[in-house]
Structure formats: C-alpha cells, structure tokens
Image 1 (spheres, helix red, strand yellow):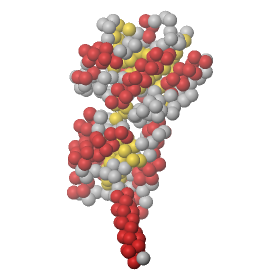
Image 2 (tube, helix red, strand yellow):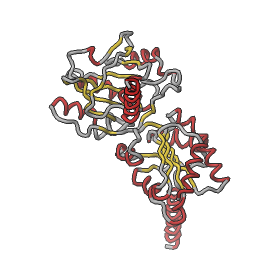
Image 3 (cartoon, chains in turn green, cyan):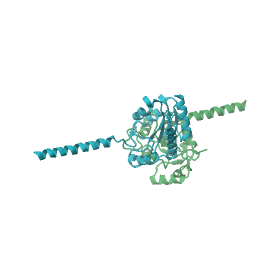
Image 4 (tube, helix red, strand yellow):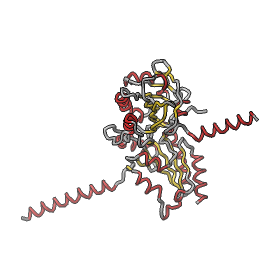
Length: 201
Length: 178
C-alpha cells in the first residue's frame, strides 16, 4: 500500500512537473547553487542585502542575447543600487554550443566588464525549474518572507534590434513597480529568442 | 517656337519614361517582403476560394539561429515532395532576422539556400501578441513550426526542430481531415 502510494505520488509529481513547465508569476522560485565565473558557487540566498533579483537566462552566442548585453548591464547599474541586482545564467549545453563554454563565459564577461555574476547552469536543472525556454529570458523575483517570489516573466523590452527604438521597457517597469510596492503590469511578455540548447538524451 | 515644342516633347518623354521605370521598379516584389501580424493573419488565417483546402506549413526561423539553419533542408525536401505528389499544401518561411540584416544577410541567404520557398520578414511591433496569436503555448524560442489546415482545423504547433517525414505525416492527416 505504501509502495502504491509512493508510486502514485511520484506519478502525480511527474505529471505536475511536466504540465507545469516552470514557474508562473506568483510562484516561489527554488534557490539554486551555480558556478559563477569567479569560481565560486552562488545562489539567491547568497545575499541578504537585496530586495530581489533580475534573473536573466542568457548566453554568449545568441545574437538576441548579444543585442541585449548592454541593456542587461544598464539594468544592473540602474537597479542593483536599489536592491535588484542582475544574476545572469547560461543554461546551454556547451557541447552543442562551444561558444557558451565556461571558459568563454569568463572571456565574454571580461570583454564586456559584466558588473553582475554570470552563472553556469551545467545540469540545466535551474533553467528547467524556472521554465526558461530561450535566451534572453528574464524572471524578476522579489524576496518575501515565504521565499523568492516570481513577479515578472519574459522580455526585457519591445525592440531587440534597437534599444533606442524600444517603446516599452518591461523589466525596468516591473522592477520600478515593485520598488513602489505596486504589482507589475504586464507581468508576462513573450519575445522571440534563441531556444535553449538542451542536452540530447 | 518650333524648337520649344520639341524641347517640351522631349522633356515629357523623359519624364514619362522615368515615372514608368519607377513604377516598374516598385511593382517588382521583394524576395523577402516585410510583414506584420495583420499581413500574416491575412495570408495564413483566412484562406479563401481555390486555396481554401490548402494546408499551410509555417516555419519560424532566423539566419542567426543555428538549429533553424540546420533544419532548412527538411523544408526544402518537404517542398519537393509536396510538388512531386501535387499535395494541396504550401510552405511559408517567417524570418525573425534583424531588419538591418534584410538586404545584407537575409535576402542573399534565402536566394541561395531556400530558392523555391516563399519567405517573409516579421516586423510586428507587438511581438508578444503575435506569438500568442500563433499559439498560446509558444514561448517564443526558435525554431518553431505550425501546420494548419482549413479554418484552423487540424492545427499542430511544434516548438522544436522538425523533420520532413513528421511534417509530411501531419500534412497528410490534415488533408484527410478536411
């Protein structure tokens, strides 16, 4: 009976995990511990002096990610002093995309002088838990008593090609809203991006 | 006086020739026209008349997307099968390349690599709405492929790489379901 129960539980859990497809706005994000470009592991609970994080799944090779690099740096420079630093995570299988290897992450971060951590999601478990599917893919999380709550999911702004021509700055607006104690709106904006290179089984 | 008339006639002729040449240049459609969501819906969403029974296979791609470029031969293959078997189906390639790369990268690439496949450049400003309109489960990652039949019957959306074999199966079941 006990076995049957655990089998059923496992079944229900796996179905939920499959159907869930990552976090929705309002979900509590599980913490992670990933290797940073400085050789140390880092997670969301590593810092106690923040109000939340701008978690950006991104990478070296994707032209959409590259197009957004300067804007991600700007987001960090604007919002880190206000309590919302950027945490960049590379989720790609580096056997498929050697440009995204850990060594190349260190190189790219140095070239662009990334002012934020750039983590390597070797097992891709963090990207899967969040439900990230593309790069860049942003999750704004707010630190609450129950944990890191997802408050915004999606695009950085509405113009990948040109920062100057972007009319809507979704992530900046969402963080501004949180800083005011308001609810981000919209809280989920889709955009085109490079599909995450999942390890082939 | 006579000389003036000649001159006016000559100028008129030159003017007319120039405007005709301009009109002709404009009437030649670009190999890769720029489309917004409305143009896409007008083409894929509401098929009328003779083409009402045509199954449409839409591939969302970009020249900068490596897995997209990798799967392009699948669409070229599918296209030749459709034509050889005279299936009521057609392929549309929708590129998400940057607009600034249209002339320098996209058109040369399309001309060389997918010669016979119609291709458009998506320039919709409300991309989130467009993505949801194609399929609410599409997160926006590339490549992605939509197979859709008459008035949305037999609709399948795949957010991953595809093969010509599986697409052909989808197309055939779509044709039979209509």
